[in-house]
Image (cartoon, rainbow, N blue to C red; front, side, top):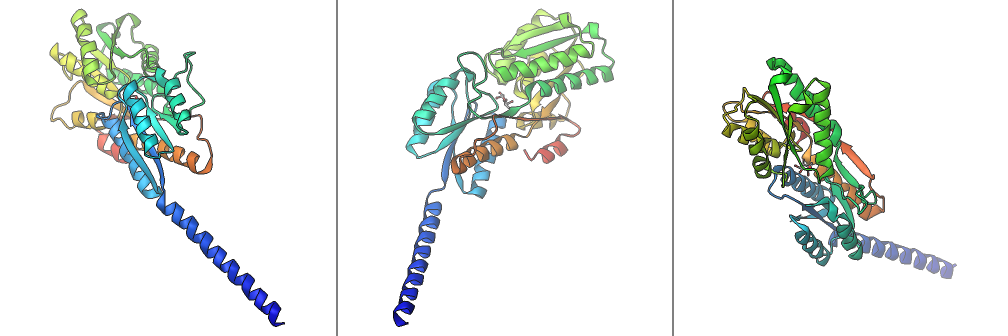
Length: 335
Ligand code: FCA
């Protein structure tokens, strides 16, 4: 009787001690080591990327993971960012690469360092020129958003009563970047569908996807085709359209002569819409940079924690933002 009672007691106290110890170790480990990830962007000064990194960091504060924000402005900066992350014990990283053709090199370095990688905005391209589907990606649905740009421009041309034969387009392009090609192709197709004259579309190839790169590219287009007094301007993002709008201003083409429509819906557009007088920057298709940052970081962390691979390709949509509605759209998108 006694023996058996004692044995029972022993068993239960052992059980309790075991449970306590297990619980303690489990909680202790979780508290001591939140998952750490990197967030590497190609242009850390661009509002879009600032928002993405901020949203990822905030998501980490809520969900107990640490985000190390880094700049990867060229191939060697990306490689040292990855080594830096590895040395800090990061388990993976989100990246918008400075050149999508670096995909294989970045992927191999991540694999060698035992880190998981997902892309945001610009998808890696493999040696065969095709998107690297082995790396999960989250980005804009480029062609559709491009179509929205073209439709917005066509609607505004109609509203202003512009005749197709008197209007030219400054199409700012980056042929190396698939998402830029898709966005610009979507805009061109929508314009042609609305009756825009193909021969009046002039290309301005940009070297960098920012305002300066676009400004340098657009100026010669206005110089060469000064017979046109009415212009539309489009590109892969609003920073580039702004570069085009600034170039047009140097040729005395202002708000009444220019319809520029961008993509992103971030600080660059807000600054333009806040000016006392309208400019040739008519609008932008706004997409939530906060959603891109938060979702891609959460997808990666979930992959690290649970082994659930994020979807191969998530595509986001956009909405037209103009001088009239930008504050409401900004509030809606939370960016
Ligand atoms: C590309 C562009 C950025 C932004 C992002 C979603 O990386 O360069 O401006 O549009 O896609």
